[in-house]
Length: 92
Image 1 (cartoon, one colour):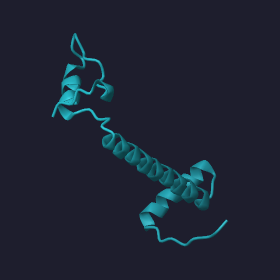
Image 2 (cartoon, rainbow, N blue to C red):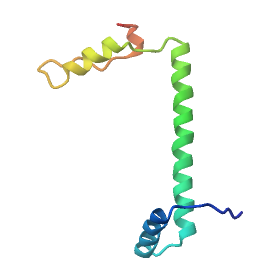
Image 3 (cartoon, rainbow, N blue to C red):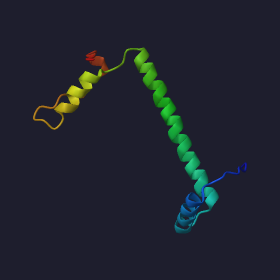
């Protein structure tokens, strides 16, 4: 395992110290968990962005108008089915 030095604002470090006291873990453990969680979220965001761009490039999209119409129907007595790109119904 490698070491890293970071500057952490005093108020954030105070909050970390309060948490480590409650959960009986070290500062290092909390920081490692926080960084791992952040990296997981960022990597997932990148993956979803790439999937979305691929969907757009292959025409697998649902237009805003279609989504808006569907959303407005929710909670009504006759809600529309969830829009699907396979319907090829693209309303601007």
